[in-house]
Image 1 (cartoon, one colour):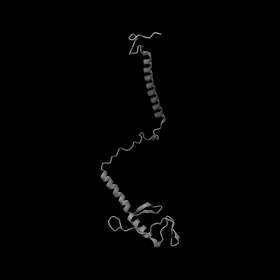
Image 2 (tube, one colour):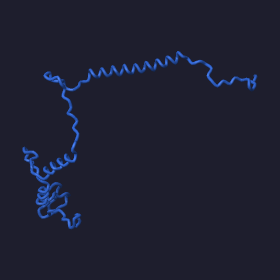
Image 3 (cartoon, rainbow, N blue to C red):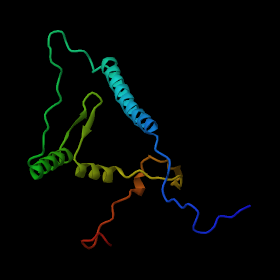
Image 4 (cartoon, rainbow, N blue to C red):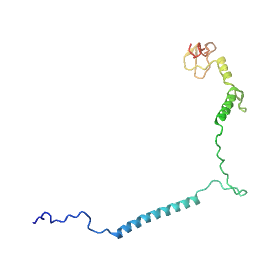
Length: 159
């Protein structure tokens, strides 16, 4: 076996075969074909859903216009709106009114409701026996064991 002599071997640093132009054009045509197929498929899907998806209830035969959503309403005076809202809520909390007239349910002011609870007594939780009676959750406390709200000594609510 003969070994090549140094300096006589061929050292090429480039590709010596030609690029296949036919394969390059075939690849480009394939990419263009896939893009066109995607556009065509999405257009067909769009037209299918436009024709087969209802747009809501049909318009009345007497009017030829569908109802449009209301115009955009921005809050132009937010502090005044908040004040008006809080005033309305305060009127509801501090006043009397009907919640359900047919069922006889009324709304009373919060202060009056707290006074009534203090007069009637708070419900007692637990099942401990008081004066021989067993208290159940939701039952009123016996008349002799009324609970009163703690009275604050200083302004911070601490006795």
